[in-house]
Length: 410
View 1 (tube, rainbow, N blue to C red):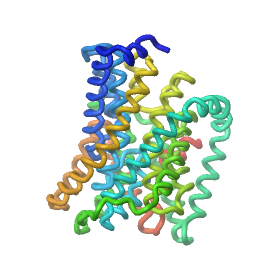
View 2 (spheres, rainbow, N blue to C red):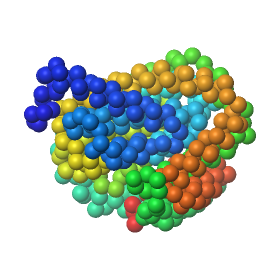
View 3 (tube, helix red, strand yellow):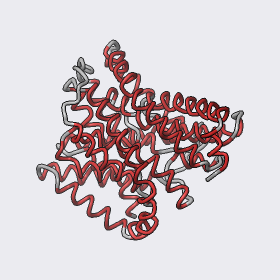
């Protein structure tokens, strides 16, 4: 155990400093989570660049960075549900979540998401060590046959469509998004951010902008009913556990992103309805943070954008402190989802939805330019056109995950 990490847990002075750093991280994660189209990876890279300038012990900077990542993973569901602009990890949950919102069950969806994330954190803490031991042996074998795994997954997704028309649309969506990924992912565009990030415009275009365009023609977010979760606790906890286990794949298998692991979790719980879908996706997003932390110590390789930033800033690995930061941030995130989410819905209902939709579209273009330059703006437009394909054929938007699956398979 790192001595500094243990000292933080037993020294009152050090504990107070650690709590202040974690609180700061929670505040940063809250801000990034509530901004549509802003991924925590972008925030992490900015923090990594500024880390040498931050006064205070480096291990506290690391705790703040982890707390920001965990808090964001709880709160990013709010703009996803209310505005339809997901980050990469939450992208495929947009449509089921919106069905709940359009049915007046948005407040319930927030609580389902919080429960799914909370269950995932608990499972990840309990299974972190045994899963790490198993993954160190199995991950290389899985990665060696990853192309076969991807092919089987794509076949299962297409077979699960209700009609041949939808299957054709799914295949077209997968091929087009896959080609876009092959072209775009190797790009390293010049940008205002410390490093280029094409994922932001890609996912905003594939999953966010088409929903915004549909929302522009609609009548806005309807009034949301009471927040009582209709499903039994077991019906939410089960998908949360599935999401947690899928999140482990992100941490231990090279090349598997949170969105790809989310596809596995979604397919495993698809028959359980939209609430299970939201719980599973939230579980993937949050559990990944915990499992990735264990993977960093076991394998020495960062598997998330937050941990890449952590390593880039050369921050000390103090496992006890970092686990405490994750646990406290998870507790804060679960509360903030409910408190801020309800207010978010009320605030949006007071704004003209057409102006709000146009404003968010402009924000997406600005963020695409900030993180990927003018190339990002072009990618946003192309991705938006491809993102309009699945609804035209009655296919699920999950086929658009070809933007990551095809480059990984190749």
